[in-house]
Length: 336
Image (spheres, rainbow, N blue to C red):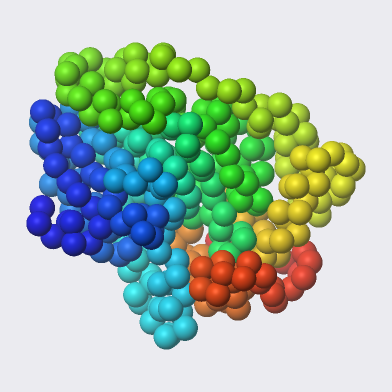
C-alpha cells in the first residue's frame, strides 16, 4: 500500500503471513490518526485473505509503540477542536475492537517500549510475544488521563488486583511480569524475533501457539517481581476505595509499598478517581461496552486542566513537574 509508508507503517504479505510494521521510530511509533486509519484499512483488506497469521512488529528496537500521539490531542483541546480528538479516539477504539474480533490469528512482537495505545494494538490479539527488552505500562494517570484502549476490560481481568495496581500507578513491567500477568503469551529472545514470520509461514497448517512454543522453548525468563509481591498487591489494591488503598500501603511499610504510594501521590487525583471507578466497573462489561465508556470519558477528560497540564509536563516542556488542580484525593470525579 503506497500510502501506508507515508503515515508511519510498512505492510506486506509473504508466504501467507501479513506483516504490519510500525515505522515512526523518532516518535517511538506513537500512533497518529493517519497510522490508525492505515492499519485499519490494511486489516479490513486482509480480513478474508488466505492468511495463516498477521504479525505486528516495529522497525525500531527501542519501541514497539509508546502509545497514542497524545501531544496532538492536547493541541486539539487547546485549539477547541474537540471533533478532531473524538475522531482519533473513536477510530483507535474501532481498531482495538477489530483486532479483538479478527478472524486471522494476530501475533504482536513486543521489543522495547509498549505503552498505552501500543497495548491497544497488541493485547487484544491472541498472541503477544515479548523480548528481554520489553517494557509494558499504562501510564495515563501520570498525565492527567486514564487507561483507555480497552484497558478497563483487560486490566480487571488480570490476576487478583494486579490490573488495579498497574492502572492506578502506571508501573512499568518487564517480560517476566508480562508473562506472569498474561499481558504477554510468549517470550522469544530479541535476536530470534526476526525468525517468527518465517516460522509461521513454514507451518501454515500448524496452530500458531505450537509454532511460538517451539521458538519460545529455547530461552527461559527470570522470575517475575510481581509474582513475589502478589500478596501485597492483592491486599492493598483489592481495597474498595482509593483512601483504603493508600491506608493499606502505608500499613505495609515496605519498599514496594513506598514506591506504589509515591506513584499514587505523583499522579493526578482526578485521574486516579476516574480510573478506579472505571476499572471497578469494567469487569462486568464486554470489550465493546468498555470502549464505549472510555470514548464517552475522553470527551470530558481531555478538556480538563489536569490533562492539559499533565501532557505539558510529560511531553511538551518535559519538566516532569505537573501542578494538579487538586493536591490530594477527595471530592469525587465522574466515571462513565
